[in-house]
Length: 337
Image (cartoon, rainbow, N blue to C red; front, top):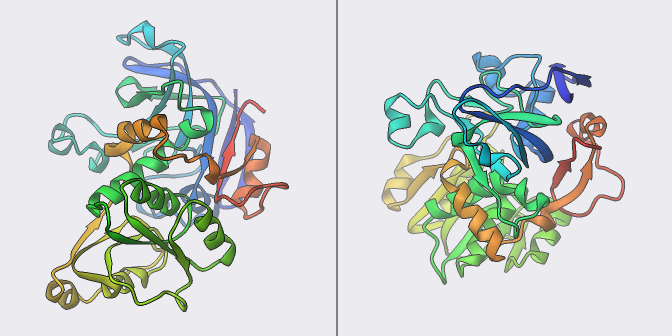
């Protein structure tokens, strides 16, 4: 089968590789759509922290946002999975440790992450192997485009849940990338007044089309009281700024990862009685994200600007935008092209 393989920083190609064979407890999925994200870019450039921490190494096959149809099952897996449309969790815990037993497999020390950590091949390929325990069935109402947006959607939903957004709250989402805009959409669905903070006027204009009540650069951000601030940026300085902007007693949620350490003044956090929370992965929010998509409360499809084939992935990771791409921040890949 064909797969996109990164062999070293900024060197990659589409190769013929051995197709996966499902081990006991696994299925093989025919990948119909996969999303590209900032993590994939960091593996392409060599900046991803896991490469320097020993959790990942080249050559590697990326791709952790995906959907497809189950084509084969391994020993112990119900054959009725064959032919079902699915997506799946990226975070594959060991299943035995204290964290896994407590339902926190996404922070298991021994975890694999599909297309990211521990050498588990990703979904930028015609097929991907996945443990059956990580699967989430997709209803008919969730099409291929939305199906590949479940993983980033789960991240965004968990961020909104951590912010404890309630109807009438005023929420600031920093970073109009895919996860930031999905967080804005989930907050809007909760009945919040949502503002978006960004840099590019084009991305801010797009945020307004999704229903944001305001979309601002840092220089133009009005002096409003924000009940919650969600940081979906890669800016090292944003957590401290979020702490300044949030109302006393409010909540700051950090879901973006900066390339350099961020610092905050904990005196401000204490004196303002602010709760700060970090969110890693969409693991706990995938099923609920599918429900939101299926009932139409949140539609992720406008965020997808274009769909390309495997041969075009390298150009996208290098910063090129496909010809004719829309305004959304997300690029999808159809490995069958």
